[in-house]
Length: 460
Image (cartoon, rainbow, N blue to C red):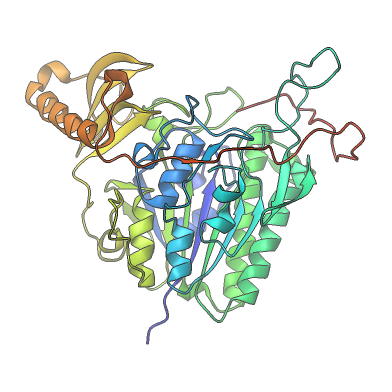
């Protein structure tokens, strides 16, 4: 019987479309990831389901658009914050649960950001083991945060580092985390080399604040941001080398991507040649790098220009692992096996762009119709084949396309809603909620923190 593939999914934080050498960067050195692309397939039209982290990650994990799983907004907020009562409902089936039920050993390392209450943590969503930060690395104590008259910060509690569901450090040394994450991955792979395993590594980079080891800072040409990108590349190289050493490389599907586009900062990343950035429904907010390698199965050096989404990883991993997609619920993702392994076409007739619970744009084939931005109507049509940078509105020249995409939008509204227009979707599932939420940490002025507060004031 042919061995089912091991799966390693690497998800970066705020890495832009143009931040890797194989996607055109001339600033960041990414030799390991460039080799990965040369050995596998580089996807040029890979979409995340949201331009910000919590809904993007929930969609990736469940194969569903954020509004379908209640992840469009979180009690009025665009992402989850420490101590909130809401998170990924325990009744949802994550990729971790899907593969665990199929007999895989499962590890999640890094940024979770799907809820920090016990019911919502990775070990309650199918992961055998978890090590990492439950939310963004700027959700700790930082300089520049306003304080009360008694000197207490009005911001977040100390940043927790979790081992499964236990806080083992508060305000950890962020420069050390990538190395520690890699160590956890290597240990897990060695322990489970004789059975199929799934590793989900979710980097803290390149989210602000950026703390990097001095060796990367010295060699990078693009400041701390470039050093963080090169740290990601180093981590990938170490993991790839271990797979080779253990004789597992040919049996392992590796997928590398990012949760949304880069933040719009002069000293930050690049979404070129796309318009827009993190937090927007322009392509720059949601189209991200994606590389897939499986030696002998995915043709080396392929460039895939077909539309694919992060939600598709759920159904794709299920197909390759011999797991069953849950039949009792609607899943928006589609199996990409034919596209990746056999040069098939995109399985999607359309794609929808939400900001929180507002339907902001829809796409079919080459055409993208913007509907709204920042709660106000903006109807513009772009041809993403001839105008990837979305610079020329061609709605007046193609009224029939505009009408067709309006109809597509109406279909998505009926299913998943549109808060701007007061439309409730018929297929929306509940958001997880607990009755008495608590933060994982509480500030103690006598605690020997690594850093009582981080000295970089940057937040992203």
